[in-house]
Amino acid sequence: MPGLKTIKSIQASLAKWYQQEKRDLPWRDTQDPYRILVSEFMLQQTQVKTVIPYYQRWIKSFPTAKILARAHEASVLKHWEGLGYYSRARNLHRAAKMIVKEFQGRVPDTWDEILKLPGVGRYTAGAVLSIAFNRNVPVLDGNVKRVLSRLFCIRENGSNPASENRLWQVAEKLVPSGAPGDFNQALMELGATGCLPQKPLCLLCPLNAVCRAKRDGVQAQFPPKKIKTAAKKIEVSAAVIQRNGKTYIQQRPQKGLMGGLWEFPGGKMEKGESPEKCLEREIMEELGVQVTIKKKIMTIKHSYTQFRVTLHVFICGLKQGRIHTTCCDQWKWVSLKNINQYPFPAANVKILKYLNLNSHIGHTNKS
Ligand code: SF4
Image 1 (cartoon, helix red, strand yellow):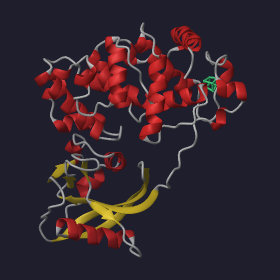
Image 2 (spheres, helix red, strand yellow):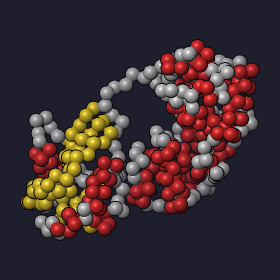
Image 3 (cartoon, helix red, strand yellow):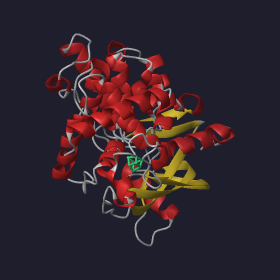
Image 4 (cartoon, rainbow, N blue to C red):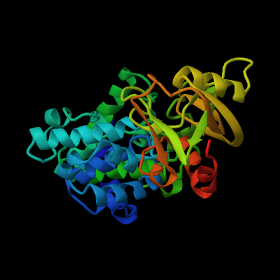
């Protein structure tokens, strides 16, 4: 653990650097705990530049927890469309409802209470309490883990609870009693903009005089690498089934991956199967109908945390049978004009874009 003198030096250097170098970000203009909570939900696993437009749109539509609590889930998910990890959107929606029901519309300002909100873990609690309420609590995200590991040559990467705990203890030691929010943001900012994973900008770093990894020239060894498992590759076929100028869409079950989002039907290719055969089989299994495949419109490559998906997309018509499905929460025939109101996963948004650009496809097939 660092000594008091080192801690004081780190606090002072970081505070000065942060005042001069901090990026102008929309959630830094406010002390409103709800807005800070929204930004922290969005920033989990997502980069700042991706989050900014989503945050601005969100605050325009849902400026308070009360307004968010009253919103329909479809609208909430639509605002999150493309940001990924949709459980964050559903949790934020549920958290807003809890804030209204149990905390009189105010984001709770104590550790025990804020942790009761759905989707709020140790990191989000620390960020909101320190930034919005000036509470003397630490934060530990991926950026902070990297900075701390290098600063003190700690051989921990937070890949298991014991390792994570050790880093939390160090972070806790460092937080000053005055302006903890600025200090925490400064640590995260340094990790995001200076203490980069590949080539840390040590010459410009405010902590270079006390950094042990810099002193020993071993920055690349910290934090120790996590053992990565290779992402699984899967091939999927999807059908844009059209009838009388409308398109079939279905809603994924609420529980599970991308729950509550809408999608085009389809499924995983089996060994030795062609994309077309896969599509015919999946549609028969899932919807109980035969389709006529009219044309392939695109191949989409999309990455999820554990999968690399290749998605083959076909325009289809209905050949035989009536749709009866149990694989989804609900299904609809919608016009192209209305389809954009529904929240879709990112890969399906690419199909929507194609359909919007080629809108004649939806109106000429009267199958
Ligand atoms: S001196 Fe280099 S390695 Fe150390 S904290 Fe600063 S940027 Fe990171």
